[in-house]
Every structure is written in structure tokens, then in C-alpha cells.
Image 1 (tube, rainbow, N blue to C red):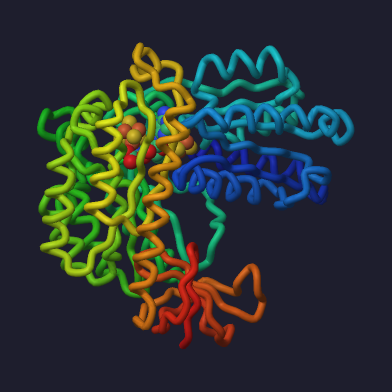
Image 2: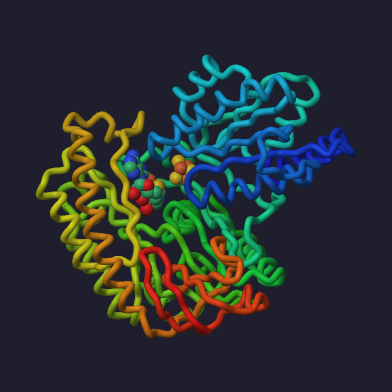
Amino acid sequence: MDEIEEIKIQKQYIEKVANLNENKNLKYTILTMGCQLNENDSEKICGMLEEMGYIKTEKIEEANLAIFNTCCVRENAEERLFGKIGELKNLKEKNNLIIAIGGCMMQEEHILDKIKKSFSYVDIVFGTHTLHKLPEDIFKVLESQKKIKDVIDIDGNVYEDLPIKRESKIQANVTIMYGCNNFCSYCIVPYVRGRERSRKPKDIIKEVRELASQGYKEIMLLGQNVNSYLRSEMEAIKQGTLKNEDGDYKEINSFAKLLREINKIDGIERIRFISPHPKDFTLDVIEAIADCEKVCKFVHLPLQSGSTNLLKVMNRKYTKEQYLELVEKMREKIPNIKFSTDIIVGFAGETEEDFEDTLDVVRKVNFEQVFMFIYSRRVGTPGDKMPNQIPEEIKHKRFDRLKELVEKQIAENNKEYIGTTQRILVEGKSKNNEKMLTGRTESNKVVVFEGDENLINSIIDIKIVEDHMWYFKGEI
Ligand code: SAH
Ligand code: SF4
Ligand code: F3S
């Protein structure tokens, strides 16, 4: 069965469940862990559930259906999930609650075993490759009260046209590719998300056009490795295993070209993307960022480590020098470009010298934002089997040293914003103060300021007057 056929069938299941649920006023609650890709998946889950007649609630006590969309990139998520499911046992009996768990963690054998043994009251377990089959799974549970395990281990397909209910009316996530081929030695993602596969350019362009017509201003393009968009497909066309009969890839055949095409769409004012991989940051992508006025001059460029030795062990395929050269080249071609990054501290074999190299790169690049992680061993990855693991205490000490440097740099960088005028996309009222509005700069800094509600969802100039660690105060 092909993907289009599969989605047709699922839409029939959506109807069937909607009929069963009619006039019952049923509610669902959802907990999403992990990255923006998972958030985008959850938006699709919510879209399907609402078409099946479920209404969203934040209160677990009144829910008839509880969904968990899980992440397994680091260990702490596991404990959190098991704690949560444990708490649901009583509610399950009291309210006849249906419990469904999906996402990356469900692609791990040892997690499935644990759920079977310790949490046998869970109704549905679905994986990253079977998310679109949730309507069928729910229908079967409603009809037969049976437990459903719907996890498969495949390279993966691309499904279009699922219903979606987005979190924001201003910024929209658009997944452009699924999976990862890189197998960084610390990382579980390639094992749980399958191989790289890209959506067709025409489907992405159609989605972004629709978003523009609905009033969305900012688009976040998502993938584990966005700058290898369409690379596997181009390779397959060359080898003759994929046909290009419909001319799907005639005009747009790379990430750079996709950026240029989205840049042309009226109504969209800002384009962001995560995550690019430094090894794939080709000149055409740099030039596209420079040329496209809507593409934010703010790039997330995951470093992971500043040590060439450790980068090799991590299988990142670039050196410290290559990373720094890339940053220089981008600064040359794109005036005022700013960077954020991800760094892992305490990966297996990390010496004091390796760690100093990481601090060195942080000093040299002067990032606007650094997401710092303590290395977490993941079952099934090469990193987990390496003999020279770093003691927790050293990991934490290094983490604190990095944090100190980063916070010092951010505080200094923030000072430079004072007195400047920034273009802000106004997102809404401030959560902490109803009288203030909040928005973000191109470099993703939060700015709060006084202003009229009708400014929401527009881009305006704001003068920065006060800096705090995690936000600015500004004036129109
Ligand atoms: N594809 C993206 C990142 C995906 S995961 C990329 O390559 O940049 C998000 C971040 O989690 C990674 O950038 C990395 O810094 C961190 N991470 C991944 N695996 C980890 C692990 N085992 N322990 C700690 N941090 C990890
Ligand atoms: Fe993980 Fe590396 Fe793939 Fe990112 S590129 S998802 S870190 S394997
Ligand atoms: Fe986590 Fe899966 Fe994203 S493991 S980081 S939710 S791809």
C-alpha cells in the first residue's frame, strides 16, 4: 500500500472514531517531550484527535485520553515518563482513561519491555513510523478494548496531508525532512527516526503558501540535518532507483534552492531553520542566506565539541579549524550574522585539553545562545560502549565552567543591544505582565515592551532600553 492510500484509510478511521465519539464531549491531554520535530508531530496528533471529536484539556483528571509523545535523546526523559505513567494507574481505573505512548522512546526495545512488564495497563504504544496510524489504533481500542502495540523498525516513509492543529497563529513549524544518516557516536536519533528522507518541494511550498494565507509570519524549517535536504533523493535519481518523472525535483533540488523559493512567498516575513550540520554547510546555502531578505541572519550551528580529536571520536566529520573557518566565511558573506550552538560536555574520552578546546571555540565565536548538555550514555550507540567514560563529577564541573563562560559572554553581548533598534515580531501579551507585549528579535532574543494589542502578529521597530539575562525591555 502506498502512502497516499494509507492516509485515505486513516481518514476513514478518523470518521469512524468521530461517529463513536459523537455527543460524548470527550477530552484529551497531551505531553510532548524533546525537540521541535516532536512538537510538530504532536501538532499532527492534536489535529487528528480533534477531527476524531476529542477536545484538548490541560487537566489530566478530566481527560478520557492521555497521549505522551516521548524523546530519548538523554536519560532524564525516561524517568520523567515512567513517573508520569505510574501516576495514571488510579485515574485509568476511575475514568476508564485510554493511555497512548508514542515517539522516539518507543522505538527502543528495552523501553517496550519495561512498559510491558511494569505498565501493562497502557493501551496504545506507537512509534515514530506509525504516528499516522493513531486513528486506527484508537478505533481498535475503543471497539475491542484490546491493547495495541504499533511500533515498526523501518527506514521510514513520508506521509502528507495529515490534519494539523498548530500551537501558534504567528509562527509555524514545517518539517522538511525526516530521519538522520549521520550516526554521531553519542546519538540515538538515527536509530529511532530511521534514514534521511525529504518531503517533496511542492508539498512544502504548498504548506507554506497556505500558512501565509492563514496569516502566519514566521516559518521554522525543521529536520535533523536540514542542509542535506533532498541529498538522498538526488543520489537515488542518479542511481536510477528513484524516478523524476513528474519533475518533482526539477526546479528545487537542494536546501539552498528551497530557501530561495520560500523567500518568494508573500506574507511570510521570517524564515528560520534547525538544525544544519557544519559538514554540509555548502557555499550555495551561505549565499542563499545572504541573498534572501526573509531568512534570519541568525544560524544555529551545532558544535558539540571544540576538540578535533573528540570530534573524530564523535563522528562529526569536521575539525576545530574547519568549524572556525566556516564561521569566518559566513561572517564575511553575511554581515552581522549571529550564531547559536549545541555543546556536549563529558563525552567518552574527553580530556582536560579537549575541553579547553571547546572553551576556546566558545570564546572565539562568541555565540548568542549555547544549549549545553552533559553527555548521557544511550543504549545501542557506539559512545555507550567506549571504555573511557568520564566520571559524573568531572562532567558536572566542566559543565559549570562552560556555563560560567557562556553566561559572561551573553551578558556582555546583551549590553551591545542597548540603544539599538531591533525588528521585532510581536507574538502576544507577556505571560508575566498582561499590560506588556512580547516578541523576538531576528537573533531570537525576547523583548517586552508597552504597546497596543493590535500590534500582535506584525513586525515593528523597537528600541532596546534595558538588558536582562534572558530578555530585554524595549520601547516603540
Ligand atoms: N540533529 C541535530 C541535533 C539533534 S539532538 C544536530 O545534529 O545538531 C539535539 C542535541 O542534543 C544535539 O545537538 C546534542 O548536543 C544533544 N545530544 C544528542 N545526544 C546526546 C547525548 N547522548 N547526551 C547528551 N546530549 C546529547
Ligand atoms: Fe544525532 Fe548527529 Fe543526526 Fe544530529 S546529526 S540527529 S546529533 S546523529
Ligand atoms: Fe528527542 Fe526524538 Fe527529537 S529523540 S530530540 S524527540 S528526534
